[in-house]
Image 1 (cartoon, rainbow, N blue to C red):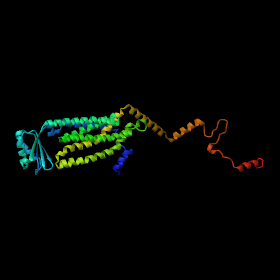
Image 2: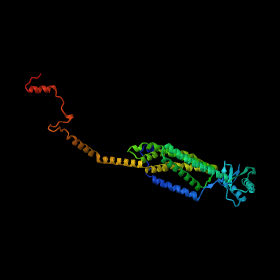
Image 3: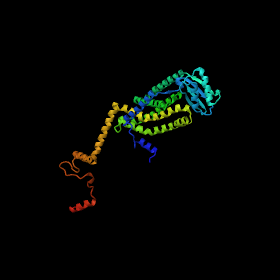
Image 4: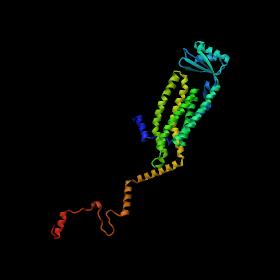
Length: 389
C-alpha cells in the first residue's frame, strides 16, 4: 500500500490528480448550503452572549471541596426565585464562577451568603462584582471594527501581492465563509460568547488567510506564462496547483488542530476548564473551516472568475483546437503519415532513381560503383590488344 508521502508526491507531480476545478460548481453549491444553514442557526437560535455583553452580576467561590454546579443553582434559586438560571463554570479546579442577571444591590450580600453556605466555605471566600452592559457594547463595537479593518487590509494586501483582484475577491469570500460557519457552530452548540470567543474568531481569520495565500502562491507559480503556450489551460494549472498543496494544507491543519482539540475535549469538557472552551471551540472549528475553504472554496471561486475572462476563454479554445489537431494526426497512424511523405516526395522529384528526361536512370547515390582496381583496368586494356604499362 503506497504511503501518504508517496500519495502526496503523485499529486505534486501530476501522476495522480483530483479534479477540483472541474467540480467547482458542485463544491460551491455544497458550500452555499452549509453557509445558508449556519445563517439560519444564527437567526433562529442566536448567540448566547456572556455577561460581558449583556451585563449582570458575577460571583466567584474559591477553595471549594466540591466544584459542582448544583449547589450554585440551588443557592441562586433560593434568593432569586424569578431569575433566569445562572451560568456556572469551574475555574482552576477548585473555584466556581457564577454569572447571573443583574442582582439588586440589597440582595447581593444575600446571594453571596447563600453561595458560601451551599459550598460550605467562609463568606470571605465569596467575591462579587457587577458588569455593566456598556462595557460589553464597547467590546462588540471594537470587535466588529477590528474585523472590518482586517478584511479591508487583507483585500488590499492580496491584491497588491498577487497583482490580481480575482485572487483578493476569492480570499475575501473564503474568510467570510470561515467566519459564518464558525459562528453558526458556536450558536448551535450554545457556548457563551465572551471576549475570548472574539479573540478566537480573529485568530481563525489569520489561519485561514495563511492557508489561502499558500495555495494562491502556488497558483501564481503554475499559471505564470500559461497564456503564451498551447499545452495546458489556465484552469488546468489552477487544479494542478491545488493538488500540489492539498497534502500540505491537510498536514498543517492536523498539526494545528491537535493541540486545540486537546484543550477543547480534554481540558474544557473533561477537566472542566470552562474558561478555555470559548476560545478553543472557535479555534477548532475555524481551523477545519479554513482548511476546507483554502482547498475547495477559494480556488473554485478563482477558477469561476477566470473562466469568464475573455483572454482565458480564447486561450482555452486555442488549447482545445491544438489537442484536436494532435488527436487527428495520431488517429491517422504511422502508415498514412509515411504514405503522405512518399507522395510528397514523388511529386517533387519523381520516383527514386529516375534522372532527368533523356538520360538513363541513375542508381541511388549510395549504390553507385566506386573506382575500379588497377588490375581490372589492365586486364581490359590487354583484351583490346594494348600492352599493359
